[in-house]
Amino acid sequence: MSVYTLGKTFRHGVHPREHKEQTEHVAVERMPFVQRYTLPLRQHLGAPCQPVVKAGDQVIRGQVVANPGGFVSMMLHSPVTGQISAIAPRRFPNGEMVESIEIDADPYATQQFSSLPPIEWEELPLDEFIKHVQKAGLVGMGGAAFPTHVKYKLPEGKRCQRLVVNGCECEPYLTCDHRLMVEDAALVVRGTHIIAKKLGADSATIGVEMNKPDAVIALNEVIRQGEYENISVVPLRVKYPQGAEKMLIKALFDEEVPAGKLPLDLNIVVNNVGTMAGIAEYFDLQKPFVERLVTVAGPGVERPSNLMVPIGTPVRDILQHCGLSRETRQVVMGGPMMGQPLASLDVPMLKGTSGLLAFTEEGVQHPTEYACVRCGQCLEACHSFLNPSRLARLARAERWDELEDNFLMDCVECGACTYTCPSNVPIVHLIRAAKMALREQKAPKS
Image 1 (cartoon, helix red, strand yellow):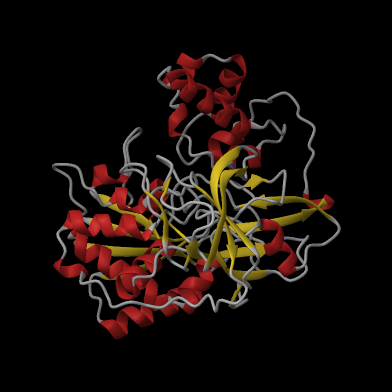
Image 2 (cartoon, helix red, strand yellow):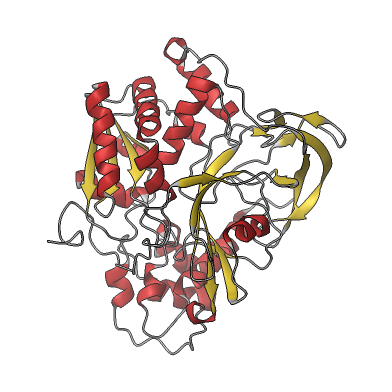
């Protein structure tokens, strides 16, 4: 029996070719430090950070350089020891110019992080614990970059009955979460234990797709040795987009998060395995979020790698370190299904960057679009049971009220509909543009 027919899963979804063989057995290495780092003040959902440094200031690795701009925001720390060279607009991966802190690394510094005594997290009231998580600068590391501490601020009448940890990594090519679970399973389990205990969860469940058997073994071994009786690992059938939190909940518990609702409405909190490792490092070592694992792969990369990279490292430097082929025609930040093609390599790696994929001409699609043939394949692919082709048609017609009536905002933009469309209709692109237009319409006018 294959990993596509065994184990729990959800209804619908797709099975794109995984392409994980390039890096799934490649051990993590550290990216060499480079000359300059750029930290956008708006690299997470919510309010931008507010700088607390100025040009010319000397900073050390892990030092706070920007404070939260509100509750839905977080602290920003220097990834290197060096000097602030500028606070000015710099190119963002989406092409915009975003206010950023630019740091020149000290070429003579060791760039070693000095750990501090553990934080006595068990003694902290929950509100103080949440402030510490915000100070750590942690965001969701599966790509959305939602400030982690916000999920732990439970509304009145809600509780975290079940903690769910996402180890699915269902996007093709990406293997950084896989390698984290294999090489640092103790960090993942430790962070899971801290959050489950602090939120008062009855249980914690780590969902891992069955194409990562070594990760399942590594996590179970740590759980067994540490006697974490309330933490379990559940192998899941391989399917995309199982990493979407609503689909992960459906796969694990056969429970649906209602339209317009959040996992917390089922008394569930969902985090990524990378976030759990970051929690452990912060509370045990007081190490803030200054670096993360990134998969660098694709046919345009000569030496596919899993790298530990300081936040703010230029994409160009990362790709050159791994050997960027002259035949490369497109670079995608993230995975091929939900990632963002880059117009320039002179942009920084962000807190939410999980991968950098380089594609040659053969892998870059320029499909001809045809009229929708009403085949229904996008309906079969959509895990949210939406009608993607209808949403695309309404988006083209700018029929905003009807889009909302058809649950446009429940689309997570996973791209499964576009992947299956035989007419090459850019469904997810049209949906994404419609959502942006609706948000702009509803934004308060100044």
